[in-house]
Amino acid sequence: MALTEAKQEYNRFTYRKMVFILAGVIALVLMALVATSLGSADLSVSDVARSVAARIFPFLDIQTTSTLDAIVWDIRLPRILMAILAGAGLAIAGASMQGVMRNPLVSPFTIGISSAAAFGASVAIILGAGLIGTGKYLIIVNAFVFALIAAFLVYGLARFRGMRPETMILAGIALNYFFSAGTSILQYIATEEEVHTVVHWLFGTLTGITWENLLIVTVVLVIGLPTLIKSAWDLNALVAGDDMATTLGVNTRRVRGVSMIVSTMVAAVIISFTGIIGFIGLVAPHISRMIVGADHRFLLPTSCMIGAFLLLLADTLGRTAFQPTIIPVGIVISVIGVPFFAYLILRTRKEYFQ
Image 1 (cartoon, rainbow, N blue to C red):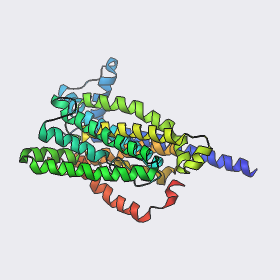
Image 2 (image 1 turned 90 degrees about the vertical axis):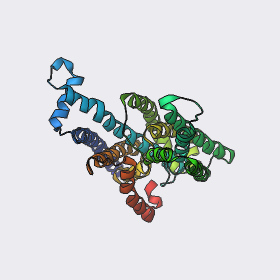
Image 3 (image 1 turned 135 degrees about the vertical axis):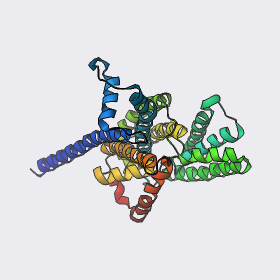
Image 4 (image 1 turned 60 degrees about the horizontal axis):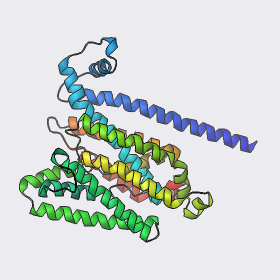
């Protein structure tokens, strides 16, 4: 009888989590419509909905205008959708990394990926050099390549020292300082215009996002997100410790390696288009953990939702709070994230993963 009651309670708890995730997705869609309506051009939510519906369902013959369509589809919607995708991708990358390393303060920013991407972008901007790529994609490709270099250095050092979580964290911290120093040196020798460009990139911004950029990020997320969510059970086992996970039949080295590589790919692609957007990969998983617990089957999709919501909210505030000035989203999310990060430091305990 007690076992039956426990199973029923577990099913009810699982059902509530699933309902929360579904409700969150619906709320995110509604928020996206509202965010698209906000800006210097005065639009209503119904205007936005009409323009979107006219493009998606052309057979309905919904009346719209070329000006409305240009504002919605060419200016605002790519930015809104990138905020959603970038927030979701950075959040799930952070949640996966935290599970792999059993450390609640790990994120793409803290293990050196972001600083390496910043160095790569600085090399392209200041020196005009890149390992591969030319033209308008020189900065993007350089940032992506250096982010991958940092990730593989961390992964290689960890394998050399036994693939322990603490080894990966220490290697990431060391690379973070190394690439930050390199970026500072480049800024020191750069011209004023080049420094301005680098600093603007480092702020993190969604300005200038195109449908082509959005397509690339979407393809990476379509491949990466299911791969990470599929590893939820293995991540749950890793949290209990490598010995326990091995006893349960989990190949800890393979799971840790695959999860880190996929998380890195997702974060690197996003950062290369948006610049440095910190705290999403750190804060969103913690908020999700407080709401749905540490079970990665629910933590990973909830982190996606929370991350998308936070970045969309931050970008909307940055666009509208001080019109006509647009505050880069990286600054806004830092203003939101730093106080919460301090709160996490004060109350971080082992129970976050229990």
